[in-house]
Image (cartoon, rainbow, N blue to C red; front, side):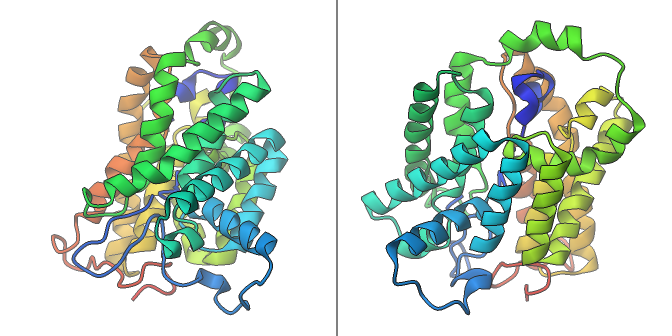
Length: 359
């Protein structure tokens, strides 16, 4: 996504976990499964933890999982690590992400959506991304920004639930994109920063900036521009699944390389704008398919395709003063998901979790 867009217009035109899909209540399909962003069965990697009898602990656990589910991590510990990493790059955005997740989960509980999805963070991850987007592109007046987050995040689980019967695949971050873009197309936040970007972004990109761009791309999933935040998020993914962390970093690297080969503005690449959709696409493949050589090839293909689509969408959305958010990821991830049965060696996991555990 495009955290830097407050200052820089490039991402608006270009881009997050999402998720998983970030960042996603997903539909059930030919196999009896429900998932949003990642595995939705049980308690993920925290299954061994005794059930909490304290409401406060349950609240923290559910909302932390929602943040983790932006990038397919069904783990409250990883979600908390992500929030801490976001706070390093942008403390305010981290708080808005937590607020968005809590609001979306509360909305889902209020209307009585499926308890299992709620407990595993599948009702809240789109809300977390709404909080990130509001912090980066929303109103500067704090009370209005809070109100925007509450309203937008509360709507995400309802939209996701309505899409459940319409889709035969995970919902990725379609709900986040629909709600965020509905608002952004009215405010057009990037139009206001175009002049500033043209005057401030010149040929100042260094090799070191390009070398760090894949890590910064990971942070851009949550609309933050910080290699420290990106490194922290990679660590959070590694806590959950080392191989999934390789998918994330590898996808972002491929996205950055695609940008360079496409002749994209080097400053945009250095800001991580060419990496975040690619990282999400690679993680989606690693999360939903059984690990194999074919899956690794599809992960790389998805990353390159997401970057190419980002490059095509960037100027179009930029003309209207809005970022393309995670639309490239959602489009490519859907395409990859539908390849099951079409390409020998590509097999969807019975219980999506991670490359290490998918069978």
